Amino acid sequence: MERTLGVSTRLWTRRLDDASLAELAAHAAALGFGAIELPLENPGDWDPAAAREVLAGHGLAPVVIGVMTPLRNLVSAPAAEIAATGHYLAQCIDVAAELGADTVAGPLHASTGRTWTMTGAEREHAYLQLRTNLAPLVDRAVARGVTLVIEPLNRYGDRTSACSLTPTT
Image 1 (cartoon, rainbow, N blue to C red):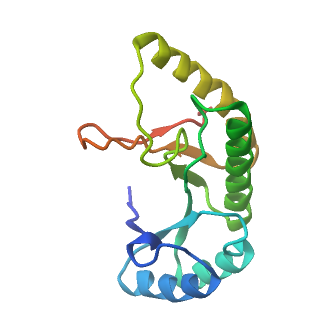
Image 2: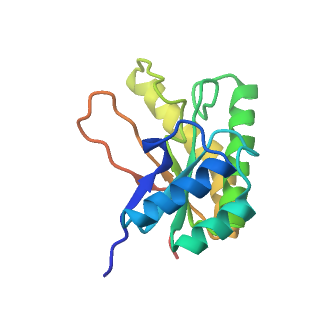
Image 3: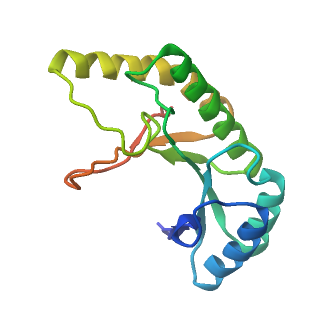
């Protein structure tokens, strides 16, 4: 099985746009990468159709990264915040499909850096809430040929791994 090594544009720039993507895609390809992670901080920051063309020209496979800024949470947050986060992630899925990316990855459950203490019962409730709030997003992703991958960030660095939430058939 051939493996593809990818790189995140965040290695070189904090905010991706159409101009920087053209330059960074050429650079990543020249370095020998076969895939490139495209953070989508805000839909509209870069054009998925233009990005698809640029990446194809360099032979790079795309991965869309959900950027979980403050107030982007699917668990233990106000209902309006959870709804807005679901809308944002739905847009990430749509952008990935338009781009030709088969993956949307990131810490999709909560804003980056957010920490809080939970009892066992609160943790179980958070898992249930996450499954409930992800269900329509997983359905949308499956319909568009996209896999959602949660990156469980752990500030202590001891057991981080990604898990796929798109059911296999």
